[in-house]
Amino acid sequence: MSEDPEILKRELYNINIEQAEDPTLEFLFREKRSELDKMLTLLMERGKPEFMPGSMQYYGPLEASVTKLAADLLEAIPPNFDSSESRMVSPKEFAVMAQKEIDYYQSQYEPLNAEVCVQDDIAGLLVSNGNLYIGTDARISTSRAEALIQHEVGTHILTYYNGRSQPLKMLYCGMPRYEELQEGLAVLSEYLVGGLSSSRLRLLAARVITVQAIMRGADFVETFHILHEEHGFDAKDAFTITMRVYRGGGLTKDAIYLKGLIRVLKWLKDGNELEPLLIGKIREDYVPLINELLYRGMLRPAPLRPRYLKFPGVRAKLEQLKKGASVLDLLQEQNLSP
Image (tube, rainbow, N blue to C red; front, side, top):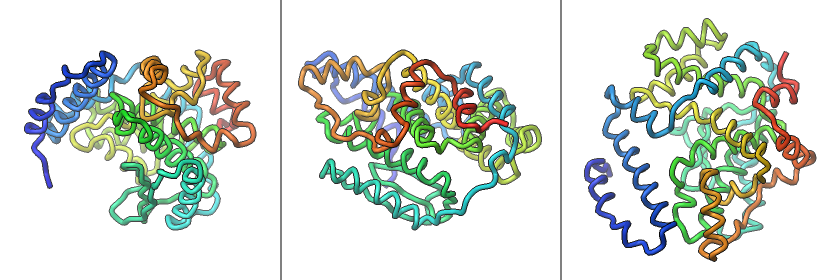
């Protein structure tokens, strides 16, 4: 059943948030309402010139420092640097691996009932409402399988059910502008388990360059040639990356993966622990509010901790990151650069 975004907006603002007696909750509700308003505006402006500015407002600006990092990554990692991939894991094999990971978490938290579905109407991997969907055409190498398990299950599903365990629904449906940090945490998990390959970093950098291109007015063909001819992506990958960003009129979401990783590294560099960010789908500047609600008994400690924290060497990596590390440092540490 389709919904009219204008009617949904009216219903959204008919909610009497002012009735919330707790000022902290009222603040969060107002923030979320503002975000939902922007999301509904995006739906109304699909295919129109206003779509891309609305996307930038929703997903945030693209800072010059991020585009410079993306360019540096593409320069540091030549095309096909780690192209000698191991054998491929079939979608069904990957589903078995993912289910095993989910079973591990369910043994710790019985209400967790995530499902793994292999479907032909899904492109790649997708987590929605705490379930993992795998496309029948998904191509996953054995060298990347564990990293993707920790990205999708150990981060996205884990934070969903940690949030689901709380009385505040926003913690699992997503606090305002949570997605950037969430994807940064997921990419960090790939690094912690040794699966953040050079080709993966090139892809994240290319997505930023593509968003930069559409923001400055480049058309689809020009952006395709930037990726294919200037940066050495094969035609299929260059087309797919460009298509993802140009859909709807300019969806700038694909820049948040690299932006989010930068934010997580800064969080750790500032001496903070990783676990507070995993209580649900939050943003790091909401942690003081979360701590206040925990202290007041309105929230409870998260029931799940990522399995990857038990992997050999992961704690040492986290302690090293607290000393300060850039994305380029991660590249050099894992011997991914030439």
